[in-house]
Amino acid sequence: MRVLVTGLAGYIGSHTAVVLMEAGHEIVGIDNFHNSDKEAVARIKEISGRDFPFYEMDLLDLPGIDKIFAENKIDCIMHFAGFKAVAESVAKPLEYYDNNLNSTMNLCKMMDKYKINKLVFSSSATVYLPDNPMPLIEGESRMGAINPYGWTKFMSEQILTDGAAANGWSVVLLRYFNPVGAHPSGKIGENPSGIPNNLMPYIAQAARGQREFLPIFGNDYETPDGTGVRDYIHIMDLARGHLAAMDYCAGNGGVESFNLGTGKGYSVLELVTAFEAASGIDIPKKFQPRRAGDAAISYSDPSKAEKLLNWKANLNLEDMCRDTWNYQKQI
Image (tube, rainbow, N blue to C red; front, side, top):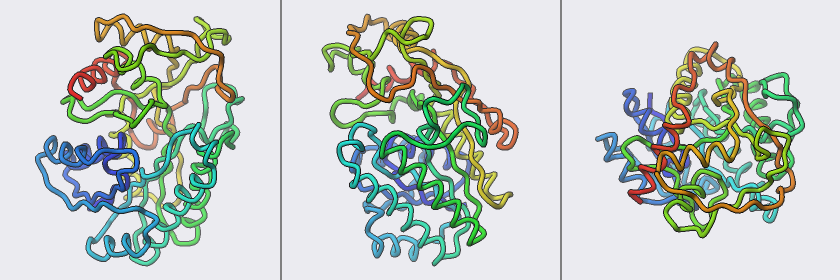
């Protein structure tokens, strides 16, 4: 299939693009480089050994993306593009709603115009309310959000669900937990602009001395070591999940949601300890007060994805830390 990958140069988009091409698919890329690097496009081509059409474009530019669809016969869309920082979304809610919802709407307009009926959406575990009992289960755990970023994912899921019902689309909603790690080549990985919002790149930057210390928010949770517990998934496992989701789209109609996680929770201190073992570096850290809205524990039940997508996470915490450090050393 020929797949349009929005947000191609981003962390998840870049790794998924490589996996798609390794599986024999063709891709067309689009990215506005809001929080990504042009170098990632060259690295994707280098790793895959393949060229592909790429457009530097904003999804809010409807005439511009119309031109992309006119020039390329697209079979399926993988929609990764969007603003993604929770704290920033609280400070700039209208920008998040405008960007994330209207980009999804514009893609829906293109699907309708060009008769495309398959889409895989980059959603998030933030569509589950934080006070749910664990593990989080599709169709059972209570839905909602506690910040504008989460609401944009929740609302985009609803837009796509309604669009699919009206137009006969096949849509898969992938709810990620905590992607970490990097491509084993070390050529692509997570390299956020400015201060990282996610834990793993902050750990890696602290290990390199780029950050004075690692702040750990909360050490008084009701967890084995007092720090928050999350479900971390290797980016390569996550990328393979998108390939499985696209195959599911090709053979099934309607809308399905899937958790992509390992089904295991690791604490912040467990992740730090594993990274110290992988890097051989003691990471300076300081405990800080809890952040508002952070849950003590969050992890997935990924059994639906294993049953219907024939997918499960295979890489462990050691793999995640090793590949992150390998990438960080090459930046």
